[in-house]
Length: 485
Image 1: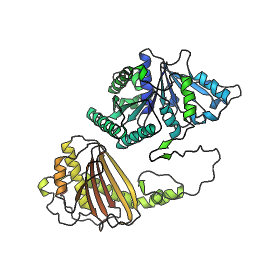
Image 2: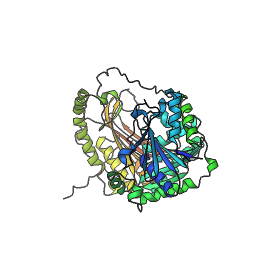
Image 3: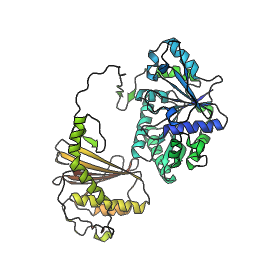
Image 4: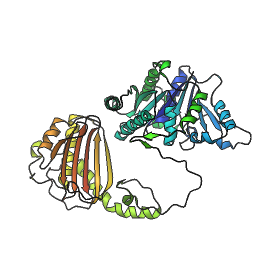
């Protein structure tokens, strides 16, 4: 009988492929027959990441094109399996071709463990692999978006009848406490909102030697067996071994897995809000694309350093960003400035809403206070070029804004921050959705807004909207530290 598990996440770049390979290697070292499957059509082939044995191309028929056949390669005892025909196309191929490919996918005595790496898979195939597996291993990193996407993926799987087990691996963490916080937060979310459990399978610390292993095209557990990251892989393998076999639902042989996948991949996929997934397979013929508009105009929020478009759009975007980037650099400089004495914070404050530079300095001070209360607190920092298009007398005027977001996984703000915010002129405090606290400060005349919410499940988020027109320097309400000499 084969234990079938899918290694996945809701966000690219979490380290799924490396974990799948190294967990499989650890299982092989314990005497098990292990295989790893990956999607060759879109993902970076594992053969480029590792110094694998020469791939063996297994043709389904003598006249089959080689690039559409099954590929099996080896690496230090594990089998690496893929197929040139994408999984979502398997229902459309001939029965004889499909059955022969399924037969050749397994080894003579069957695998003890078979891991599916979902890197590069389209949404439908990824969900089908999860639904056909006995266990789904979700990989998350300290990046807040990773946690949100993981929760969304669990929710979609639940909506579509997944009955297997969930397990969590926290990858690329600098401190063990961060991993505990991430797991606790996600566990509470999944338990309270979905009625499910997601026990922690393992924690893999950030380790610079992983890059050295990648340069050598080797698995990190093979070249750095004493590294802390390997310890996390060993713990994950130990935890997998403690799961009773009868707890694994779904197919228990590869032949049953592929036939189940073929059935599932043709079913409709329900998303949140009873919306069906619309992901029609693209044909090989494409209409001539129309010239693309600049990203900053096409989307309400645009990452300033991200771009997709033609050359003309790139030229337009370059012109738009010339002023934005200068403002961005000046704002970043102000964010990292600190104040000396709390008693001087409100010295020049008035009853009017704060102006642009005052809000920046307030956020700077809040970050310092959070850092003092929670040393070495990790946070996610994002900057977007935001377009406000609809007039709202209770919010910002229409225009283009720089939106700065600081997101921390702490569930509450320090008491010192609460005290400071309560003394800020014109700020409002309300109860946020979900039971947290919301502070908001809007200066519609000056085109700026500060929003701070502490949510028991989502963590603390500070959002600052600032008009991105270059501003005349105004007197700051927080004294700046003199530059170092």
